[in-house]
Image 1: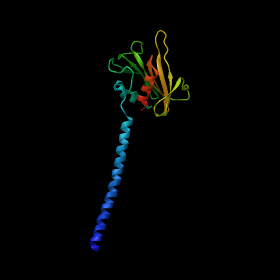
Image 2: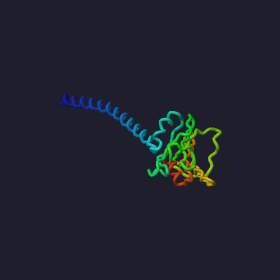
Image 3: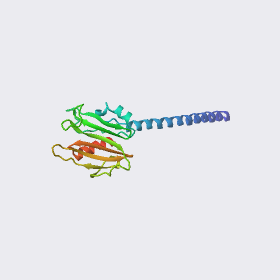
Image 4: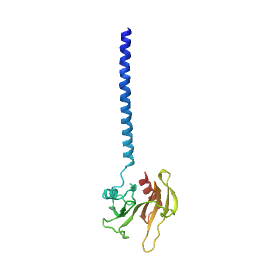
Length: 184
């Protein structure tokens, strides 16, 4: 009886050691899988409009790239093209147009997506404050019309970068939706 109790204790001890060793491996695997899942979630794809320019943008700039998933007028009826106007280590400017060779002319222009690292020389944000995702405050500037209409813009700062989305003669609701789709 004592011998079988010792054998049972030895089996339990071995089982416990193996379990603890496996638990450590399982815990690490679970943490790693969760980290990978979180990383994949934070890299939710932007609007397909940006697919062709994204590799060049990633190559040229060192600031965090935020591109909207929602773009007004991108319902598939008219194709929209993203054209890099400028890309450096500290900024990028993307023109959204209705033609692949749009240079910002009024007939082909839809809007802009712009980002630049904030420095001491960056002007103070102006416009009407609006609440954005993740507790961020953005600033809306309405468009004006003369011979042509300008872009309505929504500007916000996040992690040392100033981001701007703009739509020609755009409305506040669409720009908030566009900005939030980039932030989330």
